[in-house]
Length: 139
View 1 (cartoon, rainbow, N blue to C red):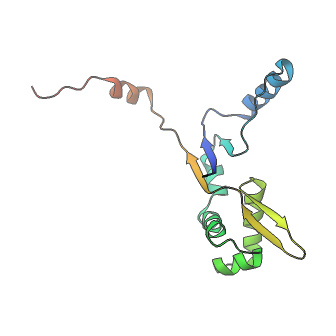
View 2 (view 1 turned 90 degrees about the horizontal axis):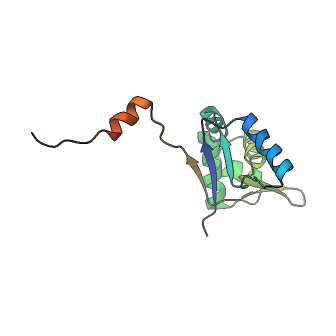
View 3 (view 1 turned 180 degrees about the horizontal axis):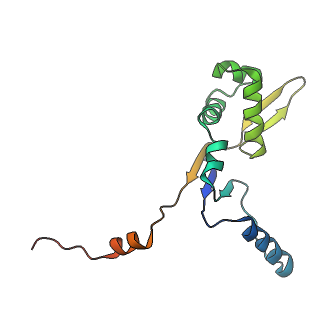
Protein backbone atom coordinates (compact mmCIF):
# COMPACT_ATOMS: atom_id res chain seq x y z
CA UNK A 1 0.00 0.00 0.00
CA UNK A 2 1.39 3.39 -0.99
CA UNK A 3 0.31 6.02 1.52
CA UNK A 4 0.82 9.57 0.30
CA UNK A 5 0.94 12.88 2.13
CA UNK A 6 -0.27 15.59 -0.25
CA UNK A 7 0.65 19.25 -0.11
CA UNK A 8 -1.91 20.91 -2.34
CA UNK A 9 -1.35 24.37 -3.76
CA UNK A 10 -4.66 26.16 -4.25
CA UNK A 11 -4.32 29.91 -4.89
CA UNK A 12 -7.99 30.39 -4.06
CA UNK A 13 -7.76 28.74 -0.62
CA UNK A 14 -8.26 31.09 2.30
CA UNK A 15 -8.82 31.11 6.03
CA UNK A 16 -12.21 32.74 5.39
CA UNK A 17 -13.22 29.79 3.19
CA UNK A 18 -12.13 27.37 5.93
CA UNK A 19 -14.30 29.14 8.52
CA UNK A 20 -17.23 29.22 6.08
CA UNK A 21 -16.89 25.44 5.74
CA UNK A 22 -16.86 25.12 9.55
CA UNK A 23 -19.99 27.26 9.84
CA UNK A 24 -21.80 25.23 7.16
CA UNK A 25 -20.87 21.98 8.92
CA UNK A 26 -22.20 23.31 12.23
CA UNK A 27 -25.41 24.75 10.75
CA UNK A 28 -26.34 21.91 8.42
CA UNK A 29 -24.64 18.90 9.98
CA UNK A 30 -22.90 18.36 6.64
CA UNK A 31 -19.41 17.05 7.22
CA UNK A 32 -16.62 18.94 5.53
CA UNK A 33 -13.55 17.26 6.87
CA UNK A 34 -10.27 17.54 5.08
CA UNK A 35 -8.42 14.23 4.94
CA UNK A 36 -5.51 13.89 7.38
CA UNK A 37 -3.09 13.28 4.55
CA UNK A 38 -3.86 16.56 2.73
CA UNK A 39 -2.56 20.02 3.56
CA UNK A 40 -3.84 22.91 1.42
CA UNK A 41 -2.12 26.26 1.11
CA UNK A 42 -2.46 29.33 -1.10
CA UNK A 43 1.18 30.29 -0.55
CA UNK A 44 3.98 28.38 -2.24
CA UNK A 45 6.42 29.76 0.33
CA UNK A 46 4.70 27.63 2.98
CA UNK A 47 5.39 24.45 1.03
CA UNK A 48 8.96 25.53 0.38
CA UNK A 49 9.49 26.35 4.06
CA UNK A 50 8.12 23.03 5.33
CA UNK A 51 9.60 20.85 2.60
CA UNK A 52 13.05 22.32 2.17
CA UNK A 53 15.88 20.19 0.85
CA UNK A 54 17.10 19.10 4.30
CA UNK A 55 13.63 18.05 5.49
CA UNK A 56 12.96 16.09 2.32
CA UNK A 57 16.30 14.35 2.77
CA UNK A 58 15.41 13.65 6.41
CA UNK A 59 12.09 12.12 5.34
CA UNK A 60 13.83 9.99 2.70
CA UNK A 61 16.43 8.67 5.14
CA UNK A 62 13.73 8.05 7.73
CA UNK A 63 11.75 5.96 5.20
CA UNK A 64 14.70 3.98 3.86
CA UNK A 65 16.91 3.49 6.94
CA UNK A 66 14.26 3.53 9.73
CA UNK A 67 16.60 4.71 12.49
CA UNK A 68 15.85 3.80 16.11
CA UNK A 69 16.12 7.34 17.45
CA UNK A 70 16.80 10.96 16.46
CA UNK A 71 20.49 10.68 17.40
CA UNK A 72 20.90 7.81 14.92
CA UNK A 73 18.98 9.81 12.30
CA UNK A 74 21.30 12.79 12.82
CA UNK A 75 24.32 10.52 12.35
CA UNK A 76 22.88 9.07 9.13
CA UNK A 77 22.28 12.60 7.83
CA UNK A 78 25.69 13.88 9.02
CA UNK A 79 23.88 16.77 10.71
CA UNK A 80 23.73 18.36 14.12
CA UNK A 81 21.29 16.67 16.51
CA UNK A 82 19.53 19.95 17.47
CA UNK A 83 18.81 20.81 13.83
CA UNK A 84 17.52 17.31 13.08
CA UNK A 85 15.34 17.47 16.22
CA UNK A 86 13.87 20.79 15.06
CA UNK A 87 13.17 19.43 11.57
CA UNK A 88 11.50 16.36 13.10
CA UNK A 89 9.30 18.65 15.20
CA UNK A 90 8.16 20.54 12.08
CA UNK A 91 7.35 17.34 10.18
CA UNK A 92 5.58 15.90 13.23
CA UNK A 93 3.49 19.06 13.63
CA UNK A 94 2.44 18.66 9.99
CA UNK A 95 1.54 15.01 10.73
CA UNK A 96 4.01 13.68 8.15
CA UNK A 97 5.97 11.78 10.79
CA UNK A 98 5.33 10.93 14.42
CA UNK A 99 7.75 11.07 17.30
CA UNK A 100 7.27 7.90 19.29
CA UNK A 101 8.45 8.15 22.91
CA UNK A 102 10.52 5.15 23.86
CA UNK A 103 12.11 4.65 27.30
CA UNK A 104 14.82 7.32 27.17
CA UNK A 105 14.71 8.05 23.46
CA UNK A 106 12.40 9.38 20.79
CA UNK A 107 11.96 7.36 17.64
CA UNK A 108 10.93 9.24 14.49
CA UNK A 109 8.47 7.24 12.39
CA UNK A 110 7.35 8.13 8.87
CA UNK A 111 3.56 8.01 8.56
CA UNK A 112 3.59 7.99 4.76
CA UNK A 113 5.48 6.31 1.95
CA UNK A 114 5.82 9.48 -0.09
CA UNK A 115 5.15 13.19 -0.13
CA UNK A 116 3.33 14.60 -3.16
CA UNK A 117 3.07 18.24 -4.16
CA UNK A 118 -0.18 18.83 -6.05
CA UNK A 119 0.41 21.91 -8.14
CA UNK A 120 -2.34 22.67 -10.66
CA UNK A 121 -1.43 24.33 -13.94
CA UNK A 122 -3.00 27.78 -13.98
CA UNK A 123 -3.61 29.76 -17.16
CA UNK A 124 -4.32 33.43 -17.74
CA UNK A 125 -7.41 34.32 -19.81
CA UNK A 126 -5.16 35.02 -22.81
CA UNK A 127 -3.47 31.62 -22.47
CA UNK A 128 -6.87 29.90 -22.25
CA UNK A 129 -7.94 31.55 -25.53
CA UNK A 130 -4.70 30.48 -27.19
CA UNK A 131 -5.15 26.90 -26.05
CA UNK A 132 -8.77 26.71 -27.23
CA UNK A 133 -7.96 28.18 -30.69
CA UNK A 134 -8.25 25.51 -33.42
CA UNK A 135 -4.99 24.26 -34.89
CA UNK A 136 -4.40 24.72 -38.59
CA UNK A 137 -2.03 22.51 -40.52
CA UNK A 138 -0.47 23.31 -43.87
CA UNK A 139 -1.77 25.92 -46.31
